Image (cartoon, rainbow, N blue to C red):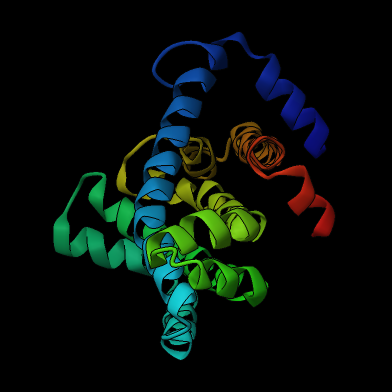
Length: 222
């Protein structure tokens, strides 16, 4: 059987659409893990990136942190956290957040630093407080690039959240891990197809978010 036949057999099996191991249940689990990890990463990366980008300090330190974060193997970190902490969601969240923080942090910093200094200087000249300069002048212009960093982080999380299955949690990785163990390649292909589809859906969500939140003038200038 080829890959298309495996996929057709998997999605055509009614048993895969119901119960605790059904596609809807595993999809909801995977989305929940991904959203929680993205939220935690954004809560860390966005404030630090905005503040450091606004003041123009800490760029070298951020680059070092980003390089270190990208160099850490997610699966190796998962195993280490599992040995240290034990079962639960926390050992999964830590490697996912570590994976997602660098693109958010660095992209946010670079987005704010790339804003044209003329309107920023004009706002300061009018006596605008630094917080308003950041959120009313710099952030609207930097938003497209910031969203691209969040999009990159989200795609990485969705693709990597399959590791949750290695520590007996759910998600779409359950099909891949169980399928490999059982030599059931219909499950493997089906799980991989679902992860790829969810990644494409994530791209569509961020495209829609960009259309809704970024002003037309900023989109045209970008």
